[in-house]
Length: 226
Ligand code: HEM
Picture 1 (tube, rainbow, N blue to C red):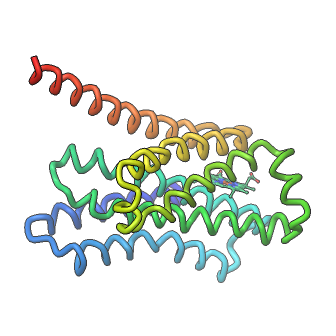
Picture 2 (picture 1 turned 120 degrees about the vertical axis):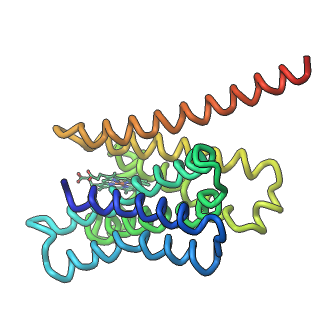
């Protein structure tokens, strides 16, 4: 099993254990959030370690782009999994860490964008527009990043209050960001579709769960009205 997959499993298992272990007398600020913050920072340490030990392989810039992009997408899917997990396990703790997971997604996506800008584009800002228009996978990646940016800036509590009902609508576009990010990945993969297929299946399952929840609510409401 690849290092990334093992680390991803550790992060998911850790979050689950911490939530189940502490949910009876959870101290969100002192236990839950710092624990989740620590495990969510592990990929950054792994990337940092790979850089300082010079283990990025023959094309370090591309390897860095792949690593950071991969983690951005994994955290995006983890963020989307928080609400369903909360409903399945009947605990609100997952919802309490949803914003933090979303901000980690934005953090890894920003790192990915910076790696592209500095090491692949070599800061040739005049070529930025050209790349955006002529390479569809860059257009898709950038579109996904813009949505994540919008979600990050509207994530503070003050914005929830300010935007009211519009906030929920805006934050539903996280599904659009995930779909566009997945298309960005599918555009790049040339031979190994396995990983893209796994991410696609996870996203489809998360979509179906939300649609099922929505339909169930509608049926319950119409039953109670009649
Ligand atoms: C800011 C705009 C973005 C740019 C310019 C960009 C650019 C790139 C580049 C150059 C690569 C490497 C392609 C290759 O040489 O094979 C890549 C890979 C990737 N990107 Fe992006 N990207 C962007 C946004 C995103 C976002 C927002 C996500 C996810 C949330 C994402 C997820 C990925 C993934 C999963 C890969 C492939 C990783 C792998 O194969 O292991 N990218 N991106």
